Image 1 (cartoon, rainbow, N blue to C red):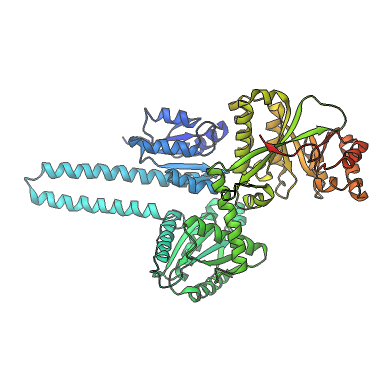
Image 2 (image 1 turned 45 degrees about the vertical axis):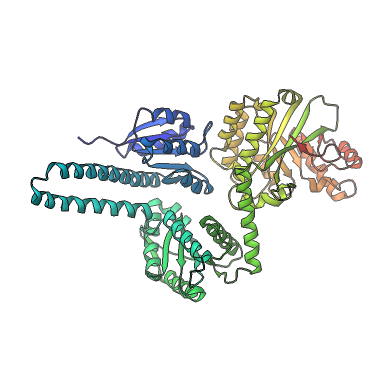
Length: 594
């Protein structure tokens, strides 16, 4: 009787374990669970799973380190590992650590089942291949007496082995939904082209084309994941038919993004492909459940040039060009000249993204702080706000958030900075007992994009527990931005932190029309007035009036108020006359390293 495969699920959030277990239960698998990387490694000493589902962000050792340790054990080097992550940037790091696939959060049932079945099939084929190889070796030794029979059996078995090897090679390089090449195969192909360019052996400048399906999310969300997969499959067939099979390399990059690499013909070949693709989509209709959908695309092409050194660099640059083109209402764009001004601008944004990643990996970020002072009475204990700085490797100087936060938000890595700052702040405070005793409150800024991450509040709670710090001393400041538009996520974040004694501040209050809606609908504990109203309120009656209105509203709601950008005594006097309790700025304290 064939034994059911064993799947090990590793996640430190009980709800995630429950959801993944319920999804995989339907696949007739035996399930083992571990709530940490350390627990998973201990379990692997006495079991041999067929598949591991591994969460990225966990207390203790994270998913990447856990994966590396698993791969270091010869017994588990071939066990497929699927990372579970909410961040696109974690995908490449997961593959580098030894992962085989990924599942994006929030979890989709059909995606989980498809990817799990895909990896289990691959794992089963590998083991069958090994058993068959061993069997062949045994038969060669045992059946030499009957060469005719042996040769006949060997031919059959060798053919089976070749089939399984071909199947394994196919699965390793192709996307199971579209049957196009996958991200790994695309990486290998582009790396080969880059090496050819650097060796000056390429006859033409190759182009990287990114195709983004504009209506995919609408169809996928309204009709379901099965419809979304069918749409991707049909589009893959369309793009394969329109491309040149001898010179073009078609792949599914991720989600609803496809990539085509044109290695021959230069910009003329790209222009010709763009025309064919536009006409193809003009004639294409997707039918599902008695409904018909017409689709549009955003297509951009960039040359792969000498100054590009990696696959990730090419993809990030193309994604930046696609993003800016969409914002400008341009849905078809070919970058022909690498020295084009707009191209340089995109490359500058890309360089910021790479510098941030380097800063996180090399610990180039620094934690600084600025004191917050009482304007009404003497306070014996300190209130401080934590500030982040990035060290410039070349000059040794400090780079301020205004220069890099926008790029971090654009590339979806601002949460990594938030996590780094929170973790390092708590670590330093736990190691400096005398400073911790002096401080009454520590304010930390968090991006609205981080707030919307499902496990971000849990990460903060885990850090508090790990460093054994009192949550009542922490205030998390949520900046008023366009990204903060999901009240349910924000309420959940605030509720979880309130349960552990933390307070929440609405930062930069007054800069947007939605401020008052945030204040009425979400349970913020205090308000920070945006510095643009404070820094000249002693000479600008309109700004003084704005501050007065905010203070009166806060008093009605019984919320304390903090004023930013307090730079002179005249501003202090004006704030005190309006009843503002707290002030922060260079007049009181210039930021210093924690």
